[in-house]
Structures are given as C-alpha cells and as structure tokens.
Amino acid sequence: MAGTRRQERAVLTANQYAQGNIEGLSDYSTRRLVASTVLTESNGGDLSIINGAGYVGRYQAGATWLADAGYVDADKVRAAMSGYRREWTWAESGGMTRFLEDASNWKDGLSLDQYKASADLQDQAFKRNSDAAYRTAMRQGVLVEGDSEEHIAGFLKARHIAGYGGAVKVVQGKQAATDDYGTSSYDYYNDIALNRDGLDQLLIIEERFKGIPYQLPVENELRPGEANLSVKALQENLKLVGAVDANGRALQADGDYGKSTREAVSLFQERNNLPATGTADIATLTTLRTHAAVLSATPDFQQVAERFQPPGYRSDWMQPNDQGLPSYLQSPTSAASTRQPRDAMADGSLKVGEQGQEVAKLQENLIQLGINDRIKQPITADGVFGPATQRAVQAFQLWHGTEQVNGVADRQTLAAISTQAGLAIVQRAADQVSDRPARDFAANVNLGRRIDPESAADRYEASHAPHAAPLSPAPASQAPAPISPVSSPARIDPALTPSRLAPEDQAMFDKIRQNVPAQVADEKVAQAMLQAKQNGIPDAGRIGRIGVVDGTLWVAGVVPGFHAGVSTSEPAPPMQDTLRANQSFNQERDQQHAQNLAQRSQEDPSRGPRQ
Image (cartoon, rainbow, N blue to C red):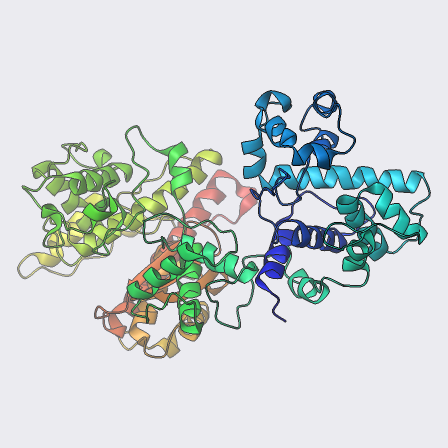
C-alpha cells in the first residue's frame, strides 16, 4: 500500500534509525514511534527544518530538550530564559534562536549547524529523552509492567509533543488542553495507539526488509517524488555503476527521488540505449540491477593494493576508460577530458615510440607482476614505450601464449595484464598474511602453478621454427616418480565435446550455461569455464555470480579476487580447441598436484605413501 510522500519519508526515516530500541519498546515499535513523531514534527524527517519560533530538526528540538539530551548547557538555558515562564514564549521572542546560534552555549564542541546536519545526533537525542521519560513514567506508576507497546509508544509521542504533563493526563483519562491547531495530547497518543496517522500498514511492509535495505524486491517502477527504501536501493545501485547527476555529482542515497536522482537515472538510460525518461521503469531497474550485481561480484583490489604494493603504485588502475580498455589506461583527469581518446591509444594499442600516462600505467602493472625479475633489462614507469618495455611485453605474451608475440600491447595483451595484476594483488596479500613464499606472477596464468619462462620460450621457438619436430616428452628421470595414474600424461582426445567433459567440468559448464542468455554460444561458455579455472575458480561449487554485462560474460568466484570475463562480441575459439586446452590444463594441474604430494611424502612420510 502506497502512502503520501510525507508518510513515505517518515517510514524511510524510521527504517534508517540506528540508535537501538527505546526502553520499553521493541525494534518495530521504536521505529513506529520515530515515524509517527517525524511525520507530525518535520514533514517526515527533515534534518535542517526550523519553524518560526526556532525549534529545529526532525524532532523540532527546543533548547530545554537539547539540554535534557546533554547537547547544550542547562544552566545557560535557565539563565537565558530568566523572566519567561514558558519556553514557547521565550522562543517566539527570538531568544531561543539567538541562544542556539551561539556555539558557546553548546557542549562538547557541538553547534547548531552540526546538529542540523547529523541524523545520528538528532536520533540519539530523541532516544535519550524518550528513555528518560519512560523511566520516569515507570517510577511514578504512570506506566506499569504489562502495558502494551502501542500504549507506551503513544504515551511517548504525546509526551514529546505535548509535554510530560499532557501525556500523563491521557493515561489518567483527564481532560487535556489543545494547541493552537486544535490538536490535543489524545490525538498524538492515538496516532500510534489507534493508528490515527495511518502508518501501521506502511511500516508492516517495510518491516520485512529491515536489515537488508538494499535488497528490496522492486516490483513497480519508481518515479520522481517518491521517498522510500526502494528509492534508496535504486540510488545505491546508481552510485555503484557510477551514474551521476547533470553536474557530475555523485548521488546521496537518502531514499528521496528528487532532481539529482532523476538526472542520474536519465544518464544511465542514455548509456544503456533505454528511453531517457528519468523514471526508473522495469526495464531500467532490471538493467541497473544486472550491472550492479556484476560489479558487486567482481573483485575490488584497491583496498588491498594500498597495503601490499611497491612504492609509486597508483590506486586508480581499476577505473575503465571510455574505450572499454583495462584499468590502467585511464589517467586522473576531468570527466570532460577523458571523453577524448589519447594519442597513444588512438589505435587501441601501445607500442614502441609512444609515451604518456597510458604507457606509464602499463609499465606499472608489468612491474607489479614482477616482470623485472624475469628480463635482462628492467623497466621503469617512465611513460616511454622503449625497447625495454617492448621486450617486457614480449615476455608476457610469450609466457601467456598469446596469438602474437610482437611486443605490441594490443587489447588482448592489455586485458591479460590487467587481470593478472589484479589477481596478483589479492594472492600476494594472502601469501604475506599466511607467511608463504612469494609467487611468480609474471609467468603464471594460473596462480596455483608455475611456468618456467625458459622452457616456455623453447616451446614457442620450436613450434614456430620451420619444419619443427614435435616436442619430445621430458625424460622420466626429470620428474618425480608417479604416485597415481594422473601423473602420467594422457592422450588428448581429438573428438572432445561438452558432453564428454569430466564430471566436475561438466557441472561447471552447465552452471555457466544455465545462467547466461541462450544467444551466448556454447563456445563462449566453454571459453569462460576455462578462463575461470585458469584464474583460480576450480569447480562449480566455487562459482558465485554469473552475468552478461556490456558484452562481457562474467564469472565471479565465491572468494573475492577471483573472476573471469570473456567478450561475447568477439569470435570464440573453436570448441575443440577450448576443450583440448581445458584437458591440458587439467593434466598439468593433476601432475602438479601429484608432484606436490610426492614432495610432501618425501619430507614427511606420515603424510602419504612413498613410491
């Protein structure tokens, strides 16, 4: 059931309340009291509102109420009110406004501006004063054990607005005075006790979602002017995907669908080829949730990077540029300038002779991968793509089996370096925490196994040499004695199909297949499965979220820091090639596992048989 805008704002304020239960009330009844109070006092929870007499904030706090909460000096309040019998009379004279504007009257360094800007300060004051009123009422027998929560909450609202004496008259059934608007303390009490304000049905709806405010199921479109938790979820997702208002400002997730939110929605719609109406219709909400889900599933390495990176490392490498290229190809410039492609990336690649921030960031990531430990002439992040950088890129291409080993950092190479740099950050952090030896990331497609660059170079040269003979298997003496059948390489089946995959691979293939649109080819699914395994996601049980966003099929692991992404717009390798590569990967993995077992058993006979 939808309420008025003011009611929805009151419910939103109540659901954002985070000061704990008011004494005598449950979580729900506490929020019910907050919602009803701000509905009456401040249009649903406006923090900075001030009425004509100077009462301020969502609870319309006066000086004595603020003194009771411990925010202003009570002695100074009494001195300032000297000659006035009632605070209201003093307030109407302008005295209270002048008093609160003087920062010297506040305690603990607080001020009127700080109070007006802080929901926590205002909600905390409301809780403190409501707790004190409840304890007084219990001590005096006005409230007793067994009173219903509706009765207690109604009493506390009446006490807040009409004063303690007016609330007591309601409980005792005595005649109560009315205010200038004809409202009595009975009306305030009945707002909650008899649902006079109509918030019960609204709070029941929102109550189910407390604790998970950003996972609300949105069944209807959201429009400008609404204010509720669904709008807040919309704003959080817009912030996550980087949508901003017309002035480039990030949104404030306040649950209020105002001008900034409308502009951000419109911008998101334009970028995703949706009608730019500014209204979050079903198509917009579905697209936004998909984008946000994938971004939530993909790793955020920046926080770890700040603790585990070499000097000079930049934290902006995760930001994509307007060409859809990896992280390190965006420099920290204004939004307007980043819309223009840089000269170095005009053709989508980096090569000898080019220079600039893009080259420097490429060099940084190569250094991050430890490339300098593997090449004769180390590189520096000087932003100049010279022969040394070319050789470093060639080395990376060689070790990672790219189609061309030419030292040109094309899109494929840039994407591989970006992915490996991110995975290296997470794994290096884990290694340091667990006190494991540092790993070789530059020549390691899968972080769990090593690749010898010299042997990799030999294989590459042999396979590309004229009339090259097939590589011979290594002599048996060079490998540990087999301890299980998997340590002996099996023949790669030339007629592989997905249906003939090993059971664990079949389960992984099926899980990805079931979670992507039908138009995504099986070849792409197999490619994503293989890349996921290479990037540290070993089986279907370790897969988290799966989705297709902006032409990329993403597979995220349940462990942060492990993910794979393949383009759905580029041609996929033939199924046979991918499945052969997968079989080779499995064999190398199993051989490595067997060798590890053999090594452990030699070091400690109690851990396994020695062959």
